[in-house]
Length: 566
Image 1 (cartoon, rainbow, N blue to C red):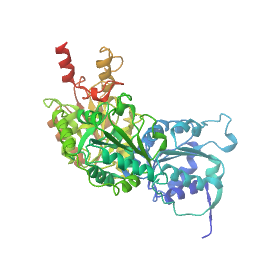
Image 2: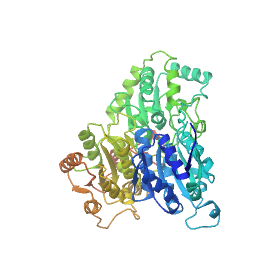
Image 3: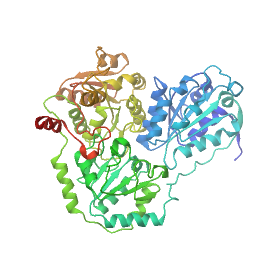
Image 4: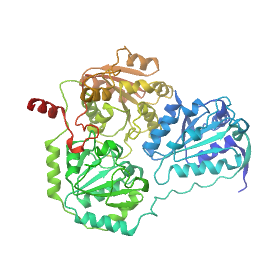
């Protein structure tokens, strides 16, 4: 096949099609106009979603990637267009989400001269990308884009930025389409000696516990994870990012671990003799006090990224490699284990310390449980960050991977709505629900206009307590109830807002009203906002004090008991 002469904008489009991209999220501007002109000519091949803000585009690309397992793509112009993507890029980087971000800069002769809307976006994003490219030669454009997709989707996944100067989008070069490289699981670092040490640790354990992180989902490892857990015969907990890697309704499952983890998970990990950690990075919100975390246990850490080994928690046994590849080997190397007495002990913790809430009034947990009931547990749930996020993680039973999309590492308020748009575009047959607090919803609520423009039928649930709930919870517990700038005294009406932006909305004050509104929204086929009014003093329980040992997790009942004893 002979190469075809194409300009840079045509090359960008052809490379995206070549990589299997069907949807791009973005916002046009001066330097990227050539690319958008070419996109116009190829709208039958690539769908473009014009978001209300570039940050929404980056979160949408992220949500698309998390929900589908494919690389998410977003566009932005130079200067403020590019910098508006940075929060979304950092969000994806912290949670290892594969994205390719294509920005366009000023022409090559104008670089470095403080030209209008010029910014060094690759320099700005260096700390929060796997790699960054600036393309100043059209002959290198195709290979750079192909390389960006390969980097984003290989090993520990993450965002890659490709900044293209405007003259490159207009200049021409020979283009020859090629088949994209097949991405193979990273297995070359798996060593036989490490596998044997892992097997020995498993065989010698009497009280093993398995902790699942986001790496299990990234590696599409849920089937081998389930086989491994059954074979080890161990209880299992997850991190926020690991939700859905194992069936949350399974009797082996103890709930989330960490600051707002269940007592069963926190106490179980604190008393196990072997902690098998799969694709998790021992975040501070997971481990609490590093000196006391799983102090009675041998730590077996399996992760694709060698940089995570011994970074936060020193492990005794390590296996470096793709989770699916490692477990596929391990599952063949040891016989079925029997830990029924240990499982019975942990089951006792689950029964003794269930998650509870006040069912007499409308609450965040009540809303989440009702969403679970009305969706039969078969929906993609996106969240913002805060109390509502923790309630969603605690009270919705996630049974499948890629059904819980939330900003874990960066904790980005304003993430969920954009992510829900990306998830729905990537999974049009799935019901997609974004759960937000009223503080988070204010951050990027303009994306309701995007949903309305394209009639993307997401359901936006706002857990509205008229405060910054999680910050207020900390102020209540640790700052002497000094509520500095965490109370909203204005009269923003989210129902009228939804209507003004082209959607529908309803305010609810009881669980019965919520059920009626949600049932209506499911059948509507248009974006719908449900404003749920709850008390501003509701809290997320259990909780571990910042820097505390995870076994010291407490509830309101524990606090009340301490006061009575005092």
